[in-house]
Image (cartoon, rainbow over all chains, first blue to last red; front, side, top):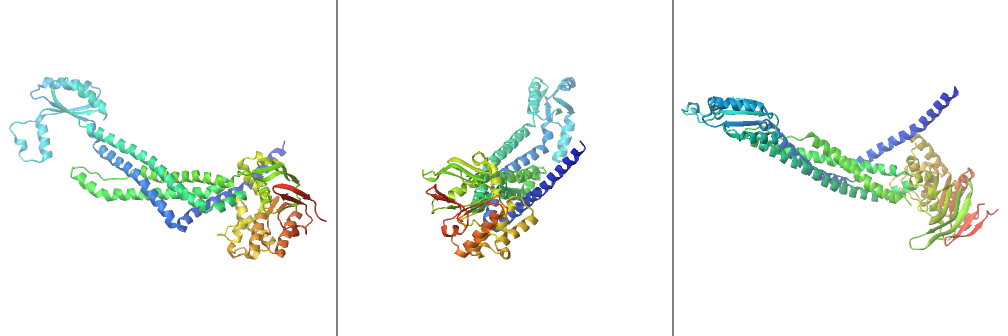
Length: 323
Length: 223
């Protein structure tokens, strides 16, 4: 009984000892493959960098579309508060009782969060201040109606439509604004760009796979004697595939990096004109890149490169190493 | 142990590379495979490390039927077999050391072990002082010795050689065969394909003669 632990410990130590060199050799091969992948970029610079540049341009297209969608989202969010607002313009000559009754009714609506009554005098004063017109407040007859400013419980179109339907039955309400409609439409445009970006990413991702696979195929063709020899002397498929996986992943990653640089440059170049254009409408918009797009470009590029290497590598190496 | 049981290899064009081959080479023994060019020597040798598959029959190595082996088991089998190729199969963009070290790197040896074993293998074939030379700088005989060093560096249980003295002069050919004989003396199973009958007769080793893919004669060692 007492000898069992020592036998087990000795066996475990032996296993550990034999595993250590294998792990060290595995790490060394990974290191060699990584260095080899970098070396190949400079050994055949024209072919390697041409592929990377093509990947960068191809990947930048969906990223630009996604960035455009992100800008629309930002523009929408600036005025998002408007989407939860609704102004009721009361009919001329409404009495205090009618206004009180309407306000009581509004208090009972689940779609209304807050309400504020704006008398015509207060409205005229605010308008004068906003438009900065001298003597506007000295008009004898104030043409502005009584207004009730509503804050809705949310920004959904359904909420506004439900309330609008109910308001039509009230004779005290002459008109009402549903100011958030265009934000809803903006949101739909953003979703369209977002979806278009993903579809382009998928479609152009396939292009990336073909471009990288073709480059790696040429690399494999050049190394076919070495691969066949390694197979003959007992190299595993994984061992033969490893340098190719590093090549593919590095190419894809650098392609993603070029795409990120292109998108960043495009945004930087257009930022000035967009800011000036927005400020002429009284808005402060500064175009920015969504960090998710950058992460997606780098991770997506690396993954597509790796996937290409897996596909072409397994096919080619399988043919070279199996009888 | 290498065992062939009624092995045939038929090519896609219908021609037979090997036909009904049966023989047994026990562990630690040495044999020569003789026959004219196209007799099937290379085809037979290629079946042993599973570089090719027989159309029918069984090839057994150390009692294992290669026909029942999965492709993931081939690397393990091939690491136990050293092959001296007819056309050297050397990587011309690397030096002598890197060519000989390749089987050890593939098998996951550490740098210190690789250095020690490569030095020993190159010393055996008399090329220790040329380990940094590029392959293109070597003569045909030296390239063949690099080929042999690479086959031996992994200390294989089986050594196969396909026309190892192809275009070499008689003295160098004898030198290379002497080395094969030394490896056999330390327990390695050796099978050498050669058409150089005069050279083979100088060694007391049994000969399997092939003719048009069939065994035409099985000659015991000359004494």
